[in-house]
Image (cartoon, rainbow, N blue to C red; front, side):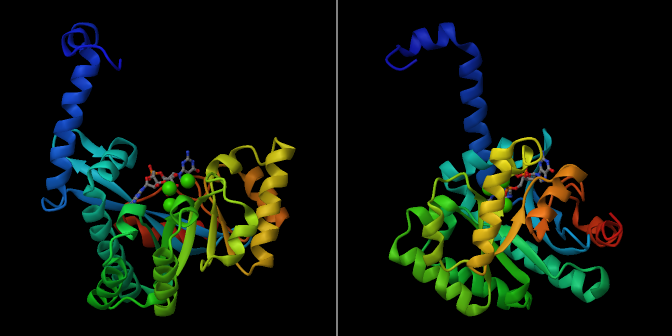
Amino acid sequence: AKGAGKGDWKRYRPDLQTAMIERSALRQALHEAVEREQFVLHYQPIVDLLAGAVVGVEALVRWQHPERGLLGPYHFIELAEESGAIVGIGGWALREALHRCVRWQRDDPAAAPAYVSVNVSARQFRRPDFVGQVRAALDGTGAAPAALLLEITESLVLHDTEQVLADLRELRGLGVRIAIDDFGTGYSSLSYLRHLPVDVLKIDKSFIDDVVHSDRQAALVAAIVTLARDLGLTVVAEGIEDAGQRAALIGMGCPYGQGYLFSKPVPPEQVPATITATVAA
Ligand code: C2E
Ligand code: CA
Ligand code: CA
Ligand code: CA
Protein backbone atom coordinates (compact mmCIF):
# COMPACT_ATOMS: atom_id res chain seq x y z
CA ALA A 1 0.00 0.00 0.00
CA LYS A 2 1.01 3.59 -0.53
CA GLY A 3 2.97 5.05 2.36
CA ALA A 4 4.05 1.67 3.74
CA GLY A 5 7.79 1.23 4.21
CA LYS A 6 9.69 -1.07 1.95
CA GLY A 7 10.26 -3.52 4.81
CA ASP A 8 6.54 -3.80 5.58
CA TRP A 9 5.78 -4.32 1.95
CA LYS A 10 8.33 -7.12 1.72
CA ARG A 11 7.05 -8.76 4.86
CA TYR A 12 3.37 -8.70 4.05
CA ARG A 13 3.28 -8.95 0.29
CA PRO A 14 5.82 -11.51 -0.93
CA ASP A 15 3.47 -12.27 -3.81
CA LEU A 16 3.52 -8.65 -4.86
CA GLN A 17 7.28 -8.53 -4.62
CA THR A 18 7.59 -11.57 -6.85
CA ALA A 19 5.19 -9.97 -9.30
CA MET A 20 7.28 -6.79 -9.40
CA ILE A 21 10.49 -8.70 -10.00
CA GLU A 22 8.81 -10.70 -12.75
CA ARG A 23 7.46 -7.51 -14.25
CA SER A 24 10.88 -5.93 -14.43
CA ALA A 25 12.33 -9.12 -15.97
CA LEU A 26 9.48 -9.11 -18.49
CA ARG A 27 10.10 -5.44 -19.28
CA GLN A 28 13.77 -6.15 -19.96
CA ALA A 29 12.96 -9.18 -22.10
CA LEU A 30 10.35 -7.22 -24.06
CA HIS A 31 12.92 -4.70 -25.19
CA GLU A 32 15.09 -7.42 -26.67
CA ALA A 33 12.27 -9.48 -28.08
CA VAL A 34 11.94 -7.61 -31.39
CA GLU A 35 15.61 -8.01 -32.20
CA ARG A 36 15.49 -11.65 -31.16
CA GLU A 37 12.57 -12.17 -33.51
CA GLN A 38 10.35 -13.56 -30.78
CA PHE A 39 7.11 -11.98 -31.95
CA VAL A 40 4.68 -13.62 -34.31
CA LEU A 41 1.42 -12.42 -35.79
CA HIS A 42 -1.74 -14.44 -35.86
CA TYR A 43 -4.57 -13.39 -38.14
CA GLN A 44 -8.31 -13.34 -37.57
CA PRO A 45 -10.66 -13.22 -40.58
CA ILE A 46 -13.04 -10.28 -41.01
CA VAL A 47 -16.15 -11.57 -42.69
CA ASP A 48 -19.01 -10.25 -44.82
CA LEU A 49 -21.78 -11.25 -42.38
CA LEU A 50 -24.41 -12.00 -44.99
CA ALA A 51 -22.26 -13.82 -47.56
CA GLY A 52 -19.83 -15.40 -45.11
CA ALA A 53 -16.88 -14.47 -47.31
CA VAL A 54 -13.62 -13.26 -45.77
CA VAL A 55 -12.88 -9.67 -46.75
CA GLY A 56 -9.76 -9.06 -44.69
CA VAL A 57 -7.78 -10.21 -41.65
CA GLU A 58 -6.72 -8.52 -38.43
CA ALA A 59 -3.11 -9.02 -37.37
CA LEU A 60 -2.77 -9.81 -33.65
CA VAL A 61 0.63 -10.05 -32.02
CA ARG A 62 1.86 -12.95 -29.89
CA TRP A 63 5.16 -13.29 -28.06
CA GLN A 64 7.02 -16.55 -28.41
CA HIS A 65 8.70 -16.36 -25.01
CA PRO A 66 11.67 -18.73 -24.69
CA GLU A 67 10.56 -20.05 -21.29
CA ARG A 68 6.88 -19.28 -21.05
CA GLY A 69 5.68 -20.28 -24.47
CA LEU A 70 3.29 -18.34 -26.67
CA LEU A 71 1.98 -15.30 -24.80
CA GLY A 72 -1.07 -13.33 -25.88
CA PRO A 73 -1.16 -9.51 -25.71
CA TYR A 74 -2.89 -9.67 -22.33
CA HIS A 75 0.46 -10.67 -20.81
CA PHE A 76 2.59 -7.88 -22.24
CA ILE A 77 0.82 -5.13 -24.21
CA GLU A 78 0.18 -2.90 -21.22
CA LEU A 79 3.80 -3.19 -20.13
CA ALA A 80 4.95 -2.56 -23.71
CA GLU A 81 2.81 0.59 -23.89
CA GLU A 82 4.14 1.83 -20.60
CA SER A 83 7.80 1.10 -21.35
CA GLY A 84 7.66 2.32 -24.94
CA ALA A 85 8.58 -1.10 -26.36
CA ILE A 86 5.25 -0.96 -28.23
CA VAL A 87 6.78 1.46 -30.73
CA GLY A 88 9.26 -1.16 -31.93
CA ILE A 89 6.77 -4.00 -31.70
CA GLY A 90 4.15 -2.03 -33.61
CA GLY A 91 6.60 -1.02 -36.33
CA TRP A 92 7.62 -4.62 -36.76
CA ALA A 93 3.97 -5.76 -36.83
CA LEU A 94 3.15 -3.25 -39.57
CA ARG A 95 5.98 -4.40 -41.84
CA GLU A 96 5.41 -8.09 -41.11
CA ALA A 97 1.65 -7.92 -41.76
CA LEU A 98 2.12 -6.08 -45.07
CA HIS A 99 4.85 -8.47 -46.13
CA ARG A 100 2.55 -11.41 -45.36
CA CYS A 101 -0.36 -9.84 -47.20
CA VAL A 102 1.75 -9.42 -50.33
CA ARG A 103 2.88 -13.07 -50.14
CA TRP A 104 -0.68 -14.37 -49.77
CA GLN A 105 -1.75 -12.39 -52.79
CA ARG A 106 1.21 -13.56 -54.82
CA ASP A 107 0.90 -17.24 -53.81
CA ASP A 108 -2.86 -17.69 -54.19
CA PRO A 109 -4.95 -14.61 -55.01
CA ALA A 110 -8.23 -16.55 -54.68
CA ALA A 111 -7.51 -17.51 -51.05
CA ALA A 112 -5.80 -14.25 -50.07
CA PRO A 113 -7.37 -11.58 -47.86
CA ALA A 114 -7.90 -8.28 -49.68
CA TYR A 115 -6.52 -6.31 -46.77
CA VAL A 116 -4.77 -6.62 -43.44
CA SER A 117 -5.87 -4.64 -40.41
CA VAL A 118 -3.05 -3.57 -38.08
CA ASN A 119 -3.40 -2.27 -34.51
CA VAL A 120 -1.54 0.95 -33.80
CA SER A 121 -1.02 2.16 -30.26
CA ALA A 122 -1.43 5.86 -29.47
CA ARG A 123 2.20 6.06 -28.49
CA GLN A 124 3.29 4.69 -31.83
CA PHE A 125 0.91 6.93 -33.78
CA ARG A 126 2.09 10.07 -32.02
CA ARG A 127 5.69 9.57 -33.09
CA PRO A 128 6.59 12.37 -35.48
CA ASP A 129 7.79 9.87 -38.07
CA PHE A 130 4.77 7.55 -37.99
CA VAL A 131 3.38 8.50 -41.40
CA GLY A 132 6.86 8.11 -42.84
CA GLN A 133 7.09 4.62 -41.30
CA VAL A 134 3.83 3.62 -42.92
CA ARG A 135 4.99 4.95 -46.27
CA ALA A 136 8.31 3.11 -45.90
CA ALA A 137 6.52 -0.12 -44.96
CA LEU A 138 4.30 0.13 -48.03
CA ASP A 139 7.24 0.91 -50.31
CA GLY A 140 9.45 -1.74 -48.72
CA THR A 141 6.93 -4.53 -49.13
CA GLY A 142 5.29 -3.39 -52.35
CA ALA A 143 1.88 -3.59 -50.69
CA ALA A 144 -0.93 -1.46 -52.12
CA PRO A 145 -2.12 1.23 -49.69
CA ALA A 146 -5.66 -0.13 -50.12
CA ALA A 147 -4.44 -3.41 -48.60
CA LEU A 148 -3.82 -1.66 -45.27
CA LEU A 149 -6.32 -0.73 -42.58
CA LEU A 150 -4.88 0.94 -39.49
CA GLU A 151 -6.80 0.44 -36.23
CA ILE A 152 -6.43 3.34 -33.85
CA THR A 153 -8.12 3.88 -30.51
CA GLU A 154 -10.98 6.16 -29.72
CA SER A 155 -8.90 7.89 -27.05
CA LEU A 156 -6.27 8.92 -29.59
CA VAL A 157 -8.83 10.81 -31.64
CA LEU A 158 -10.71 12.01 -28.56
CA HIS A 159 -7.66 13.78 -27.30
CA ASP A 160 -6.79 14.73 -30.79
CA THR A 161 -4.43 17.44 -31.60
CA GLU A 162 -4.25 19.13 -34.95
CA GLN A 163 -1.24 16.92 -35.59
CA VAL A 164 -3.22 13.69 -35.14
CA LEU A 165 -5.89 14.92 -37.53
CA ALA A 166 -3.29 16.07 -40.05
CA ASP A 167 -1.57 12.66 -39.91
CA LEU A 168 -4.88 10.86 -40.38
CA ARG A 169 -5.58 12.98 -43.44
CA GLU A 170 -2.12 12.34 -44.81
CA LEU A 171 -2.50 8.57 -44.35
CA ARG A 172 -5.86 8.60 -46.07
CA GLY A 173 -4.30 10.69 -48.81
CA LEU A 174 -1.92 7.78 -49.42
CA GLY A 175 -4.94 5.50 -49.83
CA VAL A 176 -4.62 3.81 -46.43
CA ARG A 177 -7.88 3.33 -44.51
CA ILE A 178 -8.36 4.13 -40.83
CA ALA A 179 -10.55 2.30 -38.30
CA ILE A 180 -11.54 3.33 -34.81
CA ASP A 181 -11.02 0.23 -32.68
CA ASP A 182 -13.09 -0.77 -29.63
CA PHE A 183 -15.64 1.82 -30.68
CA GLY A 184 -18.14 2.70 -27.97
CA THR A 185 -15.79 2.21 -25.02
CA GLY A 186 -14.20 5.64 -25.13
CA TYR A 187 -17.19 7.86 -24.36
CA SER A 188 -16.92 9.91 -27.51
CA SER A 189 -20.13 11.58 -28.54
CA LEU A 190 -21.50 10.12 -31.72
CA SER A 191 -21.83 13.52 -33.38
CA TYR A 192 -18.11 14.00 -32.92
CA LEU A 193 -17.52 11.30 -35.50
CA ARG A 194 -18.76 13.56 -38.23
CA HIS A 195 -15.53 15.50 -38.19
CA LEU A 196 -13.09 12.63 -38.06
CA PRO A 197 -11.11 11.53 -41.10
CA VAL A 198 -11.79 7.79 -40.59
CA ASP A 199 -13.32 5.01 -42.68
CA VAL A 200 -14.32 2.17 -40.37
CA LEU A 201 -15.84 1.73 -36.89
CA LYS A 202 -15.12 -1.47 -35.03
CA ILE A 203 -17.83 -2.03 -32.43
CA ASP A 204 -16.26 -3.43 -29.28
CA LYS A 205 -16.99 -7.01 -28.26
CA SER A 206 -18.54 -5.86 -24.99
CA PHE A 207 -21.49 -4.47 -26.99
CA ILE A 208 -21.84 -7.62 -29.06
CA ASP A 209 -21.85 -9.94 -26.02
CA ASP A 210 -25.41 -8.92 -25.03
CA VAL A 211 -26.75 -7.89 -28.41
CA VAL A 212 -29.26 -10.77 -28.41
CA HIS A 213 -30.41 -10.66 -24.79
CA SER A 214 -30.32 -6.96 -23.94
CA ASP A 215 -32.70 -4.59 -25.71
CA ARG A 216 -30.58 -1.73 -24.52
CA GLN A 217 -27.35 -3.10 -26.02
CA ALA A 218 -29.21 -3.98 -29.21
CA ALA A 219 -30.58 -0.45 -29.52
CA LEU A 220 -27.10 0.97 -28.99
CA VAL A 221 -25.50 -1.25 -31.63
CA ALA A 222 -28.34 -0.51 -34.07
CA ALA A 223 -27.83 3.22 -33.49
CA ILE A 224 -24.10 2.95 -34.17
CA VAL A 225 -24.73 0.98 -37.36
CA THR A 226 -27.30 3.51 -38.60
CA LEU A 227 -25.14 6.49 -37.77
CA ALA A 228 -22.13 4.92 -39.42
CA ARG A 229 -24.11 4.32 -42.57
CA ASP A 230 -25.38 7.90 -42.60
CA LEU A 231 -21.82 9.13 -42.27
CA GLY A 232 -20.59 6.83 -45.02
CA LEU A 233 -18.51 4.71 -42.65
CA THR A 234 -18.08 0.96 -42.69
CA VAL A 235 -18.86 -1.04 -39.55
CA VAL A 236 -17.20 -4.18 -38.24
CA ALA A 237 -18.62 -5.96 -35.17
CA GLU A 238 -15.99 -7.62 -32.95
CA GLY A 239 -16.31 -10.81 -30.93
CA ILE A 240 -19.21 -12.60 -32.65
CA GLU A 241 -19.40 -16.00 -30.98
CA ASP A 242 -22.75 -17.45 -32.02
CA ALA A 243 -25.22 -17.57 -34.87
CA GLY A 244 -27.81 -15.58 -32.91
CA GLN A 245 -25.45 -12.61 -32.67
CA ARG A 246 -24.67 -12.87 -36.37
CA ALA A 247 -28.37 -12.91 -37.25
CA ALA A 248 -29.13 -9.97 -34.96
CA LEU A 249 -26.32 -7.93 -36.53
CA ILE A 250 -27.44 -8.78 -40.04
CA GLY A 251 -30.94 -7.65 -39.01
CA MET A 252 -29.51 -4.30 -37.98
CA GLY A 253 -27.73 -3.90 -41.28
CA CYS A 254 -24.23 -4.42 -39.88
CA PRO A 255 -22.18 -5.48 -42.90
CA TYR A 256 -19.02 -7.00 -41.41
CA GLY A 257 -17.87 -8.91 -38.35
CA GLN A 258 -15.22 -11.08 -36.81
CA GLY A 259 -15.25 -13.55 -33.97
CA TYR A 260 -14.82 -17.14 -32.89
CA LEU A 261 -18.02 -18.07 -34.76
CA PHE A 262 -16.03 -17.65 -37.95
CA SER A 263 -12.47 -18.26 -36.78
CA LYS A 264 -10.08 -17.66 -33.93
CA PRO A 265 -6.85 -15.88 -34.85
CA VAL A 266 -4.66 -18.40 -36.71
CA PRO A 267 -0.97 -18.55 -37.70
CA PRO A 268 -0.17 -17.18 -41.18
CA GLU A 269 0.22 -20.60 -42.83
CA GLN A 270 -3.38 -21.43 -41.92
CA VAL A 271 -4.91 -18.25 -43.30
CA PRO A 272 -5.55 -19.39 -46.91
CA ALA A 273 -7.22 -22.63 -45.70
CA THR A 274 -9.26 -20.68 -43.15
CA ILE A 275 -10.42 -18.28 -45.84
CA THR A 276 -11.47 -21.12 -48.11
CA ALA A 277 -13.35 -22.83 -45.25
CA THR A 278 -15.01 -19.73 -43.79
CA VAL A 279 -17.04 -18.96 -46.92
CA ALA A 280 -19.12 -22.02 -46.09
CA ALA A 281 -19.86 -20.89 -42.50
P1 C2E B 1 -8.52 -5.94 -30.11
O1 C2E B 1 -7.81 -5.09 -31.10
O2 C2E B 1 -9.85 -5.48 -29.64
O3 C2E B 1 -8.59 -7.39 -30.77
C1 C2E B 1 -9.64 -8.30 -30.57
C2 C2E B 1 -9.32 -9.30 -29.50
O4 C2E B 1 -10.49 -10.10 -29.26
C3 C2E B 1 -8.22 -10.28 -29.87
O5 C2E B 1 -7.58 -10.66 -28.67
C4 C2E B 1 -9.01 -11.46 -30.45
O6 C2E B 1 -8.31 -12.67 -30.41
C5 C2E B 1 -10.18 -11.47 -29.50
N1 C2E B 1 -11.37 -12.06 -30.10
C6 C2E B 1 -11.76 -12.02 -31.39
N2 C2E B 1 -12.93 -12.66 -31.56
C7 C2E B 1 -13.31 -13.10 -30.35
C8 C2E B 1 -14.46 -13.84 -29.88
O7 C2E B 1 -15.37 -14.20 -30.62
N3 C2E B 1 -14.50 -14.10 -28.54
C9 C2E B 1 -13.51 -13.70 -27.69
N4 C2E B 1 -13.64 -14.01 -26.40
N5 C2E B 1 -12.43 -13.00 -28.10
C10 C2E B 1 -12.34 -12.71 -29.41
P2 C2E B 1 -5.98 -10.72 -28.56
O8 C2E B 1 -5.39 -11.31 -29.81
O9 C2E B 1 -5.67 -11.37 -27.26
O10 C2E B 1 -5.57 -9.19 -28.52
C11 C2E B 1 -5.93 -8.39 -27.43
C12 C2E B 1 -5.64 -6.94 -27.69
O11 C2E B 1 -4.24 -6.71 -27.78
C13 C2E B 1 -6.22 -6.43 -28.99
O12 C2E B 1 -7.60 -6.15 -28.81
C14 C2E B 1 -5.38 -5.19 -29.21
O13 C2E B 1 -5.89 -4.10 -28.48
C15 C2E B 1 -4.05 -5.60 -28.62
N6 C2E B 1 -3.11 -5.95 -29.71
C16 C2E B 1 -2.97 -7.11 -30.39
N7 C2E B 1 -2.01 -7.01 -31.32
C17 C2E B 1 -1.54 -5.74 -31.27
C18 C2E B 1 -0.54 -4.99 -31.99
O14 C2E B 1 0.13 -5.49 -32.94
N8 C2E B 1 -0.34 -3.69 -31.63
C19 C2E B 1 -1.07 -3.11 -30.63
N9 C2E B 1 -0.84 -1.82 -30.32
N10 C2E B 1 -2.02 -3.76 -29.93
C20 C2E B 1 -2.25 -5.07 -30.25
CA1 CA C 1 -8.13 -4.29 -33.04
CA1 CA D 1 -11.94 -4.92 -28.75
CA1 CA E 1 -7.95 -2.68 -28.90
